[in-house]
Amino acid sequence: MKKIIIVLFCFILFAGCSQEQRAERTYAKAKAFEESNNYQEAINLYNHLLTSYPETEKAKQIKNENLLETAYFNMGKFKLAAIAEKGQNINNLSEEEFLNLNATIQDEFNDARAAFEYVLQHYPQSQYKDAINIFLDGINQLAPKMQKMLTTKANIAKYVSEKKWQSANEELNKIKNDITPEHYKLIEKQINDARYAPVDSTINRVVNYVGSIMDADYSVHTIQAAMELIQCQGERVKVQAVIESVDRRRKSVKAYNGPRYSGESVEVFYEGTTAENYFLDNEPASSQTYTIVGKVCAYRNTGGAYIRAESITLNSR
Image (cartoon, rainbow, N blue to C red; front, side, top):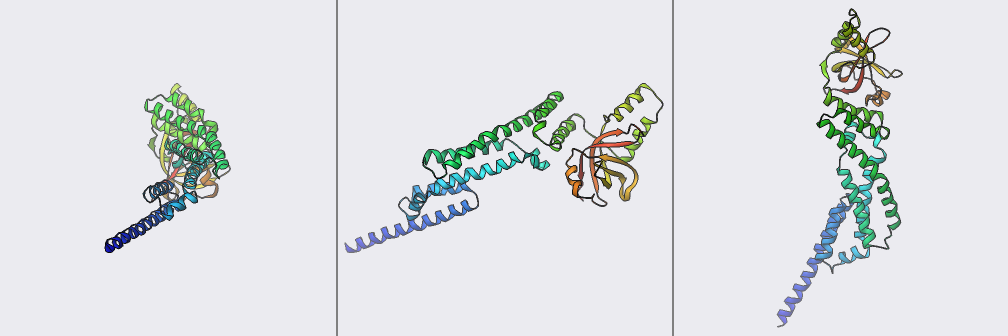
């Protein structure tokens, strides 16, 4: 009988030790997730520990130190910080980040709000109560702005797919005052790319084409074509070119047809494109080619060709 009691005692003692060890391992994993900002996984492990090992020291520590409350608060704060950065600094997003803004941001808004509201519901006297109310006010102010942006971009994509070009441009103008000229140009370029695909050309062809129109005998056709060029309403082209120099006052570059600045050249105006910021502090990449997309134009006084760029992109080697 004594042997049985001893065996049972050892079993209970071992089970207790085993639970404490498992709880400690689970707790350590949860803390690691929390330190890497993976708060949802940390919360899942804290809840698992409380359910599976409720009498352990680590379970008591979670309750005594309000670790679940803190994890939920930090999760909401972390999600909101990333969204707020995009919302408040939307004009500083890169071309790729801006074009890739999507509806998942709205889900992140909802996740942040849910985390904060969980704390207020389950911890009415929370130490984070005042901060949470400030954050919720921020969500309520920022969410409509981001939603307007996402809805407008979705509508533009819909109208472009339906070839309703006027409607697409009307949608774009709804957010014209909310975004930078560079970002406006990006979306405008997307619409134009779908409507008027740029013609592959070269600097030589652009120069020769404009020259043939401006020097031609007067006719209804050539006068109309010349006026379109002077008004910068010529065809959209895509050319590969080497850029020699930057005129930051005119916001233009000189683009050549070939390497070592051979062949014809034209002036390319880049105001309103993402290249505007780049050329503020950078010189053109030596001997590398750029892809230039824009409209063919002609100077009113000389009849010479130039390009009003929509984008200037350095090609990969």
